[in-house]
Image 1 (cartoon, rainbow, N blue to C red):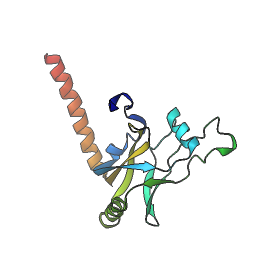
Image 2: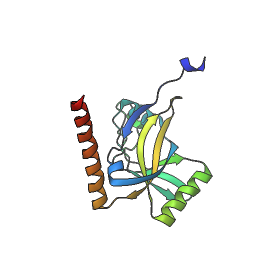
Image 3: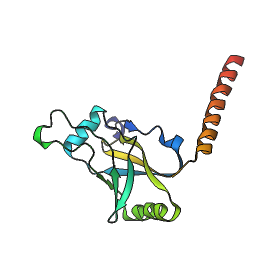
Length: 157
């Protein structure tokens, strides 16, 4: 009975370069504190999180440098496109993320911005470590080999 009102997950923005530039250690789902015009603008599908990151400030985690363009019908109540946005996490999750960033030299990278089944805006956040140039070359070789292997298997029948 509950399944008729449920909506599928709709990905609105994705950071496709993150898996190439960073070694992903752990992922976590976080809510975002947004205004009404920001939600409407995200639903239009024009937002980008490619050059954004998350940072801790005063015991809270903030999404920095994410671009959510102004909503066209928003008039004077519109939002600032690149303002910092607060991520909604439990205290234990915040402490875990801040500890990983401080101790191990990790970075908080957003992977996906999406609306979940209940229509809430969520951000998939990854604890990641930056890859060196030789690591990037290695992952590119693996990707090329898997693509070539698929072609060979398809050609064989």
